[in-house]
Image 1 (cartoon, rainbow, N blue to C red):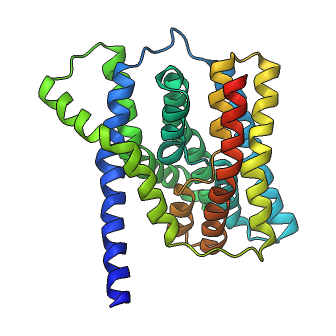
Image 2 (tube, rainbow, N blue to C red):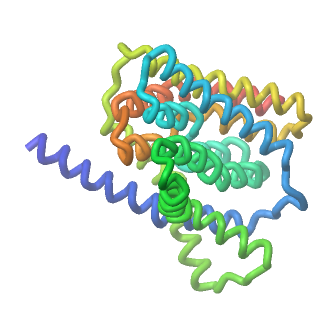
Image 3 (tube, rainbow, N blue to C red):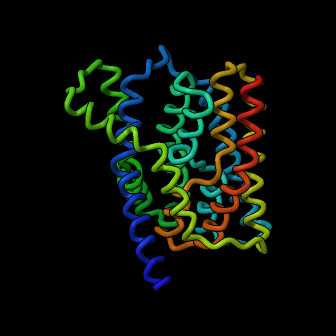
Length: 291
């Protein structure tokens, strides 16, 4: 009876994850992007302050996996994405909205829209570079499938297009999207819990502890330093630092599954970094509210 109940919960949880990923979250992101005033120019300093540290963390994670733990060359891309890719959509956006409100929405949406494109592209290139003859075809094919075939990315791209060209969204469609949007934040957090429940946690793994340090502590510290150096405004700096401190995103596990490499390390890093982030994000939000 207990096993049957657990199996039923697991199936229900998977259904909720699909609803959030394909319907609720894309609906909310599309509406938010359409209704949010876009910056007059590309915020290069903000993007550099976030992505230069992200790329540094990617290669630091790959270096650790190679030199300290002797991972195979083809697995190093998994190490990189595990360390540098944060859970911005499922966890970051609800925290931003509940802690700071819509005034912080524009920089948050910019990072959510660009993170997959930039970091997925880097990861795919690394993972596919072993096959020189087909590298361009492989990277392009997988990039189209994983990035442009991602409903969250598509929703953001469409939202930016509608916003820039001031296209009117039909009232019936907007009403439906608003209905799904209302459910997105709560369902996203619940779906995250369902996903984490399927992972197993073990602290007897040195590489996991190092990955969590890079993800939860070193990344936001680098972003903070570069934001100060580049003179990023307080509002945008707060979003960059908070998003840099997010736990490892579930898409890192998708890459590990796709390439059949290091599932256990990635899953343990996801759950441990999420647990650690409960404390680090609480402190960060309190500090950023004061600043």
